[in-house]
Amino acid sequence: MADLLVTDARIVDPSGVTKGDIVIENGRITAVGPTAARECAGDPERLDADGMVAIPGVVDVHNHMHDDELFPADIDFASETASAVAGGVTTVVELPTQTPVTTPEAVRQKRDDCEQLAHVDFGLVAGNFEDADVDVAEIIAEGTRDFKTFTAEPYLAEDREIVELLSAVGEAGGKVRVHCETQGILDHARAQIDGDDPGVYMDSRPVEAELDAIGRMGWFAEYADCPLHVVHVSSGSGAREGARFKSRAEVPVTLETCPHYLAFSKEDVEELGPFLKVNPSLKSPAEVDRLWDALADGTIDLVASEHFPTHRAERERGWENIWEPYAGLPSIETMLEFLASEGVRDGPLSWQRLLELVCARPAREAGLYPQKGSLLPGTDADVVLLREEPYEVTASKLAFVGGWTPYEGREWSHRVDTVIAGGEVAARDHEVLSDPGDGEFIERGPIR
Ligand SMILES: [Zn+2]
Image 1 (cartoon, rainbow, N blue to C red):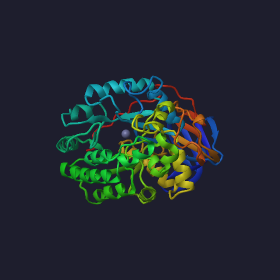
Image 2 (image 1 turned 135 degrees about the vertical axis):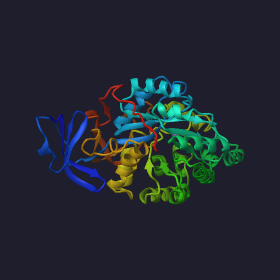
Image 3 (image 1 turned 90 degrees about the vertical axis):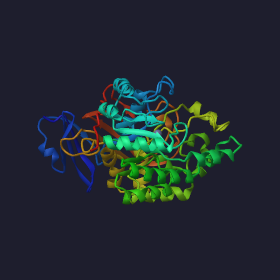
Image 4 (image 1 turned 60 degrees about the horizontal axis):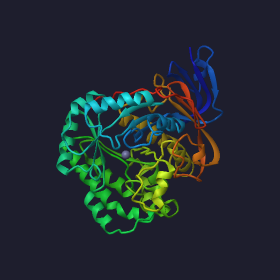
């Protein structure tokens, strides 16, 4: 017997947008499409979508949401996965931030901690690895297969260590994610700067640092025979650089970008100052245009939030001295609304391309498709209804506890109305109805 019947939705699937219904039973989708309601047995709760767009719950594969050493007491996996579900994100893959998650024991500990707090289903990434002295097989046995390393401070790994890590992880069926900026270029650029106002920050991280590192990591991955995931590509040129390896490499290369690299250029820093401090830094308007092209034409594989929570007051210190606050932006709650409004309505994306970028492709990347990232019968009932109405973005209407958003004041057209996670209504109009502990850890085995 069905538990929930969503009627009159405009359902996004890989072939297009069709009017129809979604039948949910025991946390799973049992029927979907124009005639689904007729197949619905029993007397379920009914949810009239009234023509709203229905897409699968977003799968966000890059975010930083739990670190007791780093984040203040009111920011943890509970507060941040609440912000996630409010924004239509029903599966997250959480990355290490400051506290190392570099041993099997640390992965297990973080899993146990996060399971108590999670509003949504989650996976973990191990890292940050500064050398190749890693128990790869045992970490994979703990249910994660992603290993994070850096070509830049503060977790700079030497080239030889990265090659060895790639080799060991590739052999074991895992995947390496790399932060791509070359430290030598960053060091040189930083040494040219003696100011501390927000405007100078962008000059400290030139685009060439990203281009060089993406190129080198592409060759490294091919040499070491290991799948490579390039996190947060910040420029259209970076996407092109990575695409060289997608067309020729023996190993898969996945390119990720984040909403802020599409929403802002370095010219916005004059107005928004420290509220745009992020690594890699924002690039020129021309690079932003090229990145949109790469998003639309398939060069970029997926969009992830790279959510990094801080309080407004912490961030405001940057007006005085931009080197003081942490880099990183709160973005998990606004990612879907941004892409629906500025990507689909006002930009070059179709609904199907949006589905691919934030649902299907990230689910495949995480090894979770079609259970996550699709609305196919038999899969998890994670569904987002998007309401079309003009509104102005404001932090006071978000569930996020930090009290700010870089998108403050932007005029958007699509708002997350209702979020269903595991068959239950988990959020309505950014009010969170789920509880900590509702989400489950998702074990992800080796790729091959
Ligand atoms: Zn990150």
